[in-house]
Image (spheres, rainbow, N blue to C red):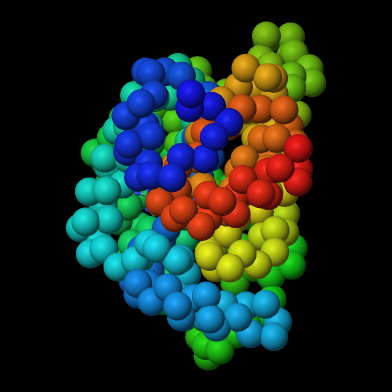
Length: 264
Ligand SMILES: C[S@@+](CC[C@H](N)C(=O)[O-])C[C@H]1O[C@@H](n2cnc3c(N)ncnc32)[C@H](O)[C@@H]1O
């Protein structure tokens, strides 16, 4: 039984158990390959400052240190599997960013997806973080309040893929006019600190994204290949959708299960 569970394993193992075309939406925030060394689990767990922040490493298990070539290969393999498990006209809501530590990673990964898989960018959402802390220790880089969420669909479904935008009028020519949903979405930057992951997502953002792109009914299945602290599952539970999550960190799977119990 795959559905409504956190699978403590590599995402390729979970996807390997899935039937073709069973997922409505992939919603995920992968690691960014910012080349920050993990492997020092004690460092992550032991350096909680008074304000509840954790220093030095982002994840308790995952080492964010692939070469950019490896990162591209990994991303291509991932999107090829997404292509197999996604329903017709399904989409991938992919939050990815770049950092000073590795300025190329995001751009090369995006280029690999577009040039070497069946997916293309259907849209790009700017996530404006409503509670990001001002933290500008750079003389040239502006204080960052935003991240991207790329909306990928299959290249041959660019015209048939659709969001949940409602038709507000039909012109005499037959042209349909849709409601405006702007591509800047404001939401909290996370759901609070997690002791095992310093790069968690926002369930408020996940809910808003799913309301735009997922069929909102109890048959919808959302997959998160990098479930982390369970944020996507929390959003699905609130909207009455089914989820499947993969996460290599056992501590984060336990943490997510406890989180989900509280929501349910
Ligand atoms: C950016 S975090 C995800 C954060 C998550 N959305 C949340 O809100 O907590 C990326 C996660 O991917 C996990 N991870 C890395 N490689 C993985 C793999 N091959 N399969 C499954 N999970 C993986 C890491 O352990 C990390 O928790």
